[in-house]
Length: 450
Image 1 (cartoon, rainbow, N blue to C red):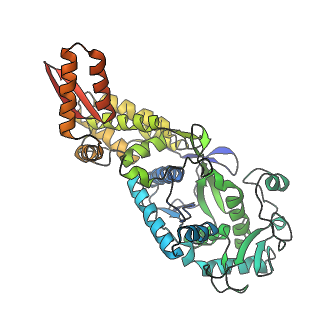
Image 2 (tube, rainbow, N blue to C red):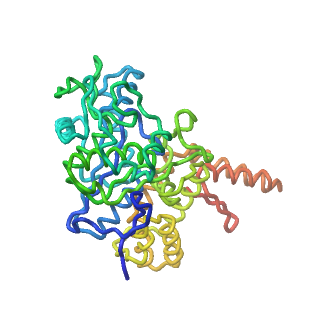
Image 3 (tube, rainbow, N blue to C red):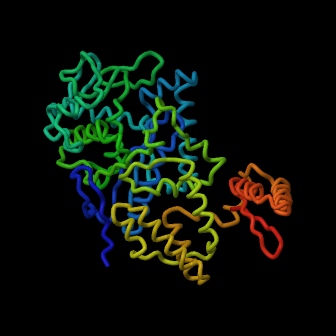
């Protein structure tokens, strides 16, 4: 059976068979966080999506180089530092630490490299100099701009012409530009802002340039896969292609471009203006990371994912159920037939359906089936804790203690004796809402953590 990987490539708007440049080293770059504020649940989606792709690639190929950058110099960082009244270095270090905790909480594999922008300014200055020397960029009033008209393929990724792109986006207005669509490669820093010495004066790089310089260092002039959220497709990724291809004299920057869709709440995009931002760190002490991970996989990455308490509750119940057949001896090989949905453009809902089938088989008590089910869950970063660890987390996070549970059960028993079944059901539901499942058997009521 073929175990070829197929990916939806935004560069061609088609689902294509993955054909690597070098089968001995698959190279992938994914845009990481700008560390100005703690990551929110929308930022968690690409973390999990591209972690699954990383796992799939490692399953098939002996070496995968996965680069995910840290943007630690940017206008947002400078503004956030002012708002919070703390030094930029302290802000970026704190947010980066929080981000790494989030990745660990979501059980994501660590990328091969996590370069910081501030550690590669010399490479950015070198790339800008190359672009100026080759006639693709110009200096004006201590700013350096990329001249978009000089790159004939601009707009190919977004599948739009230049006029459409400019009309449909916010373009930075500046009297220093030759054309409104030109974008900044270097700009002067104000007093008390981060700055580096360059041929164009003290300043800092434009955001788009950072990824071009770091991907070149770690992956070369051309590589296999570039990923990120759909919001990065234009102008960020479009600009990356333009400056990289022009600086590196190549016809290709990355062969496959993957973008995950937004997370919404009540079908509204998450944004600060909507006031519906949910930070990952706020879940850490309330919900097991596996629950969030399963929720983030519940829709195909190309489709919007609507976030809700019900989604989390359903995923919590699913994993609780799955732990009923957890096997600590889980070293069964997960075959291509089971993994097939993931090979087909990371179809996580299809893979979850396979897990439900494996669970149904494992319920019959066969140890091999239990081990295979647990291994298949492990493959996508689930059931990575023992059953005891899972129950301990739930026990520690419950808002109800053992004495209160027993008191509620006594109240329920009294209600049943009085034939007040409505009250008895209400108490049962209250306990269930607090993660406690009660069972009546042989005249006795027992309870356990759900």
